[in-house]
Length: 343
Image (cartoon, rainbow, N blue to C red; front, side, top):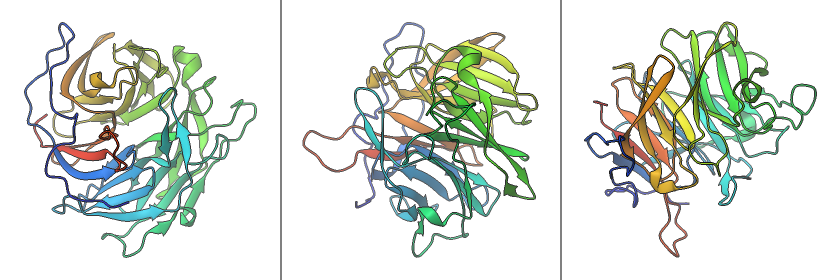
């Protein structure tokens, strides 16, 4: 696959108003496409020190250095391939990425079958590598969560990752009976055993925890419960105490398929991306405002199958999208977009 710089926005990513009464779309600057021709990108993370962007796609994990739009360097390759979805199905490999300190990258895998999936932690250099690391060369291999008393099928599809000073948390989509959020405690900068932490399905009666983030004080774990991809409007915004795992809030959003969550480091506002499986023209970036036991979803931008989001330290926002290929095209249609600071 060839990556090339894209000077125009990906087709279908233009900002348009959502045709739902009361959901006005604020005027914001259109995002820039900083990398195109990506094969189903599903995870993104920004290094706080260097500003390097790491993204996961079907074919591997890639790095984008600041000031080099379109110039992706392969960071980790050699993953296998699995399929995800109902109706349209998509090839997937690594799914979620997050930084563990300054020198390690956490990768949640989706390339294996449920019960065999792993979370891999790679040591990374300050600069892009001359040659990519192999998927099997991770410094730490966590998991799998095999079939047993806690998970009838075994867990898989480790989609998104939230990192605190004491642990990191991973959403899983293999066993719909439990809908686990997994946890790895961090000791002296090293990850511990990956264990089931939150069985979300019994708690909220909706499938599929996908997007995940932490409050600034790390006391609250915020989870986007995607729901069934073929059921419209069933996504929940849920909140749990990190200390106890106790469910604090479960709020209906009216959104279809929340795939990613992130707080702005500048404003403290909470944002999500909605893939909108049943009608991808409704997909987009949203601000979520929680007041008491209600949440208001305000559409910021329409996006073509968005999958993940991550802020840089200055408040700029990176978003990955699957996009839609032109008729007859074999070129991957995914992209990495950037919204300038100011959301």
